[in-house]
Length: 448
Image 1 (tube, rainbow, N blue to C red):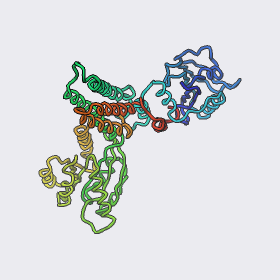
Image 2: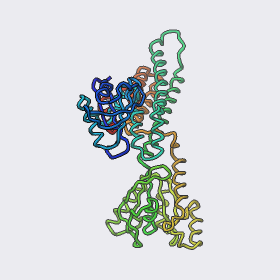
Image 3: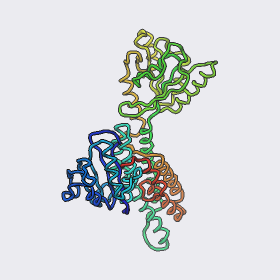
Image 4: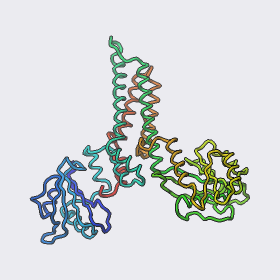
């Protein structure tokens, strides 16, 4: 337990109906007894209505809740004061607390104390921050699951398997000269392969979660003047890109973020791909090709009026190994014969009109369908940053060494298994350098 007591507002410094001020540490109850009017009514985990006072002056009428250690968010004695949400009132209450030798909390310090007091592990703590910062329903839902131990549980299960495997290998080393039945080498190797598969699955789910959090890249590609910028603006529902009948208007890569059926996308409007003598346009075309290479999904736009030409064919050939959707744009102005010719050549092409919006709903369904078929289901993914992903990658590499050495070098195998256990322990925080903790909790807001 920490010897000092901290305080901070847990709500933004704006005018609002209610503000919350948190206090955590051994002097929490003593602070309430100095500034709250209904001291005799304070009971653990019960809301009490009264006044915050400064001597004879009433500062505000509030509701106060006292949490007695260890039954609190931080595991320490805590107060939560619900006042009116005027920043003037909040500042005044904070000033009263500071005058009682209670200091302002650092970013994330409440959650950091909860971690040190074994109220949560690092995967749960990081999930708390994601609940606050999440931009989509998936992120919030996944973070809530993780706050309740979803990632910790699967990591714990793998560590338990490693402990048992390491114990069997060490027993084989220590008692090999005695008449005792041990696991066969082939069985030990099989268990190591199974553990590697478990770690690989967790890594895959974390990578999918990281991808979902940062957004999937969606690139709109096509030759000049097929309507890419109009489609870009339609998906965004705002005029972001310049639209012109002059071919080659878009010469740079325009990026925006958008949520499609609850999934975040980084959508790229690219320069039209064609042969060009213009140096600036050629630079834009190179950016377009790079965008296509890095995209999770490419929208290939075909002009229903002009039909398919060699430039369209070259673009389709460039994306043949990627996830792509073909849009036949300008169907509102084209005749049926032209549209049928394109549909006969590209069976899965989608009729579309950037002018009228026809086809937009079907496009959104196709985009999300591609992701759900290609990647881990959203509900099975984890919230993970580069720290967790790197530790899982190192654990996976460690299990490769374990598998290679199981047959002949038991002592090396046991050592490598311990290293893998340590790496997995860093994910949950069982082994964590101070600078790692500072980095994690430093990203939190002050009152959390």
